[in-house]
Image (cartoon, rainbow, N blue to C red):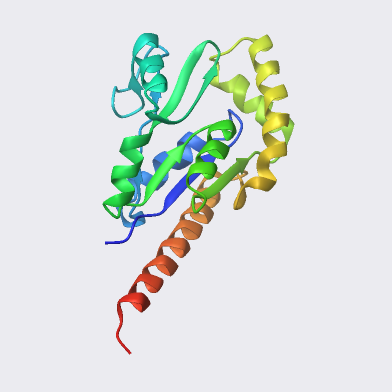
Length: 200
């Protein structure tokens, strides 16, 4: 059995990447599975351990880092976020297509370890729209929003390192575009696998 494809989605906070990932995973025809990230931040209302994130302690997270068990990790707003390496490797080895939703710093680290990973970057139609979305979430202060917008500029500069860039102007259209791009990659991989297995 050949390995699955590793898809990595990222983009600045407020671009809707989490909503897009949820929509992709809801459609079972997409043949993709989510690798749940680990974090030390507190669980929010409506979130589920093992589904939204694997919630853990600082001590446990740092132990995983020391043991080399994290594929990538970073600290945001005083909390660790990262991807356990074994989970991704096991899923890919089983032939499953894996989707990671992580920040650009982590995505670029993943690309170093898995050069064949498909990196997808989500952008808003404008900075004004990004600010509006962050404000409408109602989770952060004005100062925190300004910091997110400043961080977004660095993140936008990383986008040329990605395989594809998608503009989330209309959510439904953006989901369809990402979905079609992923299906195309999977179909081509399956064709190559078929060709390699055929006798001539």
